[in-house]
Length: 589
Image 1: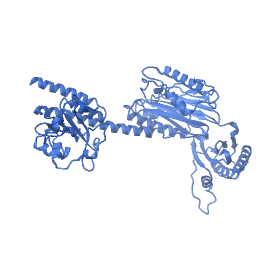
Image 2: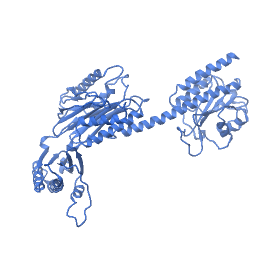
Image 3: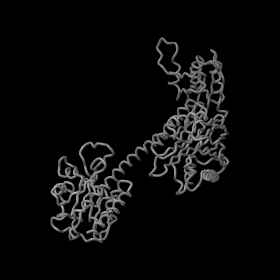
Image 4: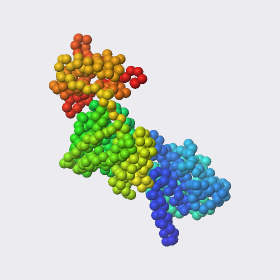
């Protein structure tokens, strides 16, 4: 007797360890089936609620059980991947009148679909409902089980005779989430009283594991959604630069992290390029990342210098908590001047791939991470030649257990140079293919961290496509603006736009002169559209309004809104810029 009790304890220990090894729902249920067949039972059926409740969710509608998986011994000549244990001939058992037909049990698993007949609705106050509420396993020969099993298994399956079946409710942390039925054939000794304790242990560990898996699945779903909403859905298409990006999670088990990237259009056809990395791999890291990204977007719209942006991000991180640390690199590219200004907060330096194939690690002051506090950030201004490609990335791309960060940066530089050599020196490699090729440098042991990658191809705007003037805030300024605009259109061969451009320029400049105290700026850019930008030192943004018939003014922005392809107004640290775009006529459009 002592030996048999010892065997039971060893079996329960081994079975619960096997069940606990499962991470997702299917692995846990499979662990229960493989641990019990054939050691404890000859067949098992596992029913789970459909849908499975999560946490404190209260189910709506009737409670339904779905047959999730079965496992059973099969004859030697009919073994499948679902078979566990030796080949026990069940043909005789299947033919015994009134006995449970084991050979007719469906094999339910990853390779088989669940038929609709495998659904069981629990009737309130019914026999099955009473057994499940009782939580404790019961023999199939008991009065409660003999009334409950036909409701669960179906009327076509008679209840096994004697103590050859155990019905064990699966109770999670808050409610019953399913049931397991253990079955033995007539060739094997019936279940004993102590086997009810074994079934209770197996059912408890399985139910708790399922609860854990369901909660983890919900958290993973929420984390994925959080990550997806925090990162940009698509990148903008600013003038003079082409963009591409990639994001890779660390692993399936850690799908959310604090890495982010962003591209933010700025006044004057400039664009801000941002990449950052918050410490940790959790929903908290993703939430902090979202707050910092939103702050960076707000600061960018104020047109603050890169060093000032990092300074305010540092203050925001300290307000979020004393241990909120992040690295960030913020760069502003001007396609007119072909220059880029970069400030760094403890982030790996960017790599610039020149048109001739030379890859250069930019010398940017490293700075301290965001959240340290009391640290000054320094910005550098560098050339951004047309045809060059700037690569911003997080440390997950270049650092792992197998290599330090500087070794990884050198490997990245060599990879970029090799890719440029393959495509030729006269033209840069395709941007999307370049991002894919960079990620191919990752080895099997290099995915310790999530990776954010932002690539920018500098096309620039040629000086011949830019016209720029200063206008004193006088009554004659609108007339001078019209003459300047007409002269630029004549040089570009766009006289067809003369009437529209002169009208809109006159209205916008008139509004700027009304409030400006310093000279007003007028700039025209010819790219795939004709863009006009008017800047003044007044921070008050214009608002479109509907003028009354008796009003003498108030129709300027109404005309701009009706005639321009797009228009907008952006507040700067020194005032504002009002801009609008007109489509180009003819083939150039």
